Length: 102
Image (tube, rainbow, N blue to C red; front, side, top):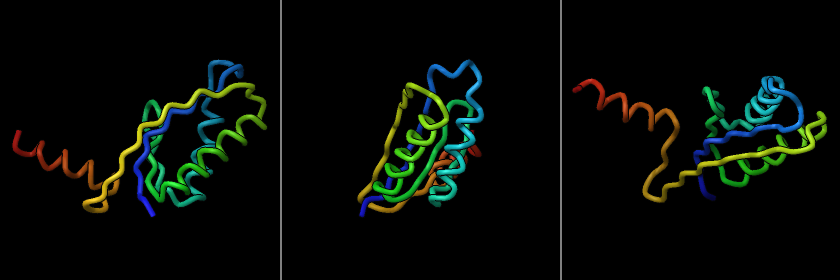
């Protein structure tokens, strides 16, 4: 099994300028998949097993298409490690620990 941290920006197209209801649907899917979603201004960070993350992302696409979006553009940044497990919180804590000395 491979753990992955993903930064996902999913943009429904053809549904108007407000996409918050679609984002909320994906947040729910990520939460139900136990991927520890962390929403930010331009996307969502999730963490979990590779296949579980990809399955949840596929479900987001399926649900958003079913809601009437004819097209979806998704950008994904992925990070994996083999030397140790790392969480989103670990990454944030690492940066914050360096800020104390600045």
